[in-house]
Length: 106
Image 1: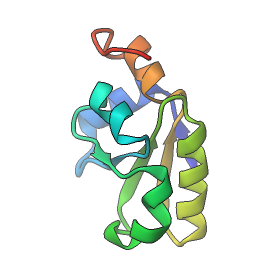
Image 2 (image 1 turned 180 degrees about the vertical axis):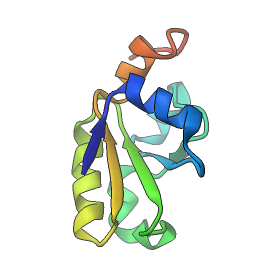
Image 3 (image 1 turned 60 degrees about the vertical axis):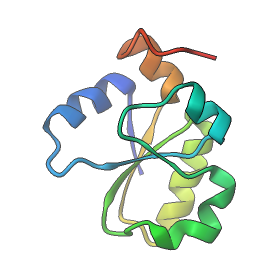
Image 4 (image 1 turned 90 degrees about the vertical axis):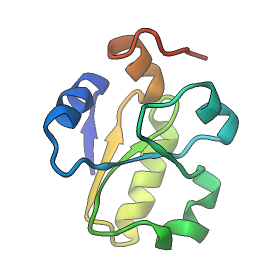
């Protein structure tokens, strides 16, 4: 799996066509607190039962709070046949500190 920092992802999103799926695997309360605009919530615990909702050919950026859960989910998706998976290293916490300084942190 590829890894991207928040700054790299921000630059990539400015030019990606089509844009990747931003898959946020945190819990609903975390997503409500803050999230990257355009991301889709699918909590980590629901991924195995709902992975058929995702296109295995699509480019997917997996996001969590600090990048640990997202790395686990990204690995699971790769083992499940997904071909183009990216882990956001540092998660939304890094995004808030490096890209969107107005985003709440927790």
